[in-house]
Length: 493
Image (cartoon, rainbow, N blue to C red; front, side, top):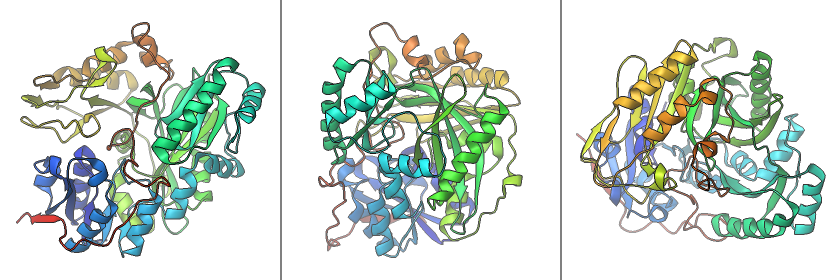
């Protein structure tokens, strides 16, 4: 195991990784921006290094500063959390070139899976079911029109370099396609430096189901069951649960088996998530593989008893998996609700400010992952996620009641501060959700007429909507020479 790990992230995930390290006896370094200088992860770290100003492109996306911080402090590994540089193959390669272990899959695996067109082709060869559509990218609108006519409308135009709910446009008729195709390509070029797109059938009333996998560097792998993440606002997940409810056991087993097969087929290592859409006939369609820890990982931990972050660190250190598939047992039901500093009454607009009151819930089988505290200033520079409330119970009905109770106890207040808690409680009380008959269209149905939209938002990106902001047009992170004066560092006693 490592002696010291640098955490290249912020907020609740930085705190989550820090605590996992501490339980393993590993010292921690938190790389932070000037805006996060007084944050809980910085306060609790063994060491903290200021790597830049508030703007993420000059701090959390600054590969040179992060690498230099690790070198200055003697860290042996870099844990990227989620968002920011967590799925950036170039950054993983830069870490390796500087003698640092990147906690995640090999760069070549991340690069292949980051290209959604390549990932679709690889998973198709591994036998995973794909949604009807194009496997390759479509350089002309005429080719896009041909594919759309073949699979039938509605379709979705997706950026090959996109992910996390970004870079996609739903098209409901042939007349809309040319404009949507052009708009998606232009947006993809700006966001990712890559304008390639592909087209697939849009499944409007499907379930979003994912499988947690864990693989080592020795060819071993296990799956840790399924999660349902169908409650989404513009592809941003709001409520997640494990295991996925109301699916036949045979469907759950098949999803888990093909997900693990797909991950192993490309040499995946570490913790990852294979995502599917499941239609009303329980036919699964592969979406993507995420090469990082997920925001919703707590629900898997609660039903399996496995600390996924600690397992990530063991794998990165070269240890063979400590689990076999027969060791993985699912117990009960866990449900998580994200608490975002957003105003649902204003189209989920960010509503940051200073927290005058912050009293998270507690009680039996209730877990709160948060970096918030009374007096904390929620920064407008980053993602709006403030906390995750997750509960466990023997069955789903009891878990829903427990989560509603916990959210009712959560007291957050400050000038201008609004949260998604009231809307989340509305979701929990919805009859379709309680009966596990909900789909990805649930949130839009609950919103007032005219409020729903087809544009997309961010999903698991602590950096905000563009995790590559500030990179060159190719998306590669420029790495200047190490500065003569390095990052500012302090140490806890």
